Length: 179
Image (cartoon, rainbow, N blue to C red):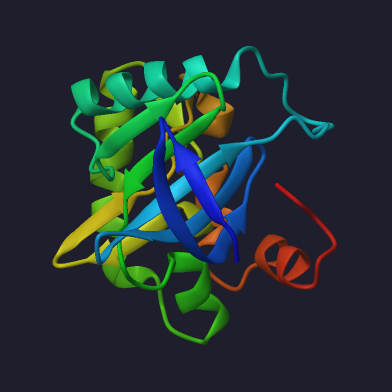
């Protein structure tokens, strides 16, 4: 793949890690170190209204840090080109674990602790399991998205539906629904 520049620093892109509502995340390398480079996109999303995405990423990162949520460190932000460089957290997502027949049960106490911290900060995070990677006894929330707290979008009322082989999880796995 091509190299990508963030504030004049070149990163060699190895592969696409995923596409979300707000951008594409790539595994990239600089000086032998893996990082994630996120390129903001402006593709339409039927169920979400965006403002300034790059400024929202910066603001949300700060809010999550203040709330004590375990997230990858933001290493650089290029506002003009709408790119972010993040610490790379190696490992399978909770979604991948469940899709491969493993249980998310061992990680439920960690996500519930994270949800309590988010709630105490009057926030909801995106509890979809592609956003979580267990690593070294921690559970990382690898997205920076957060929104004002609403009961209907908390972990117990929404997110948990996707943390096991529920009808919602199966529908997403089959490509029928994009939460």
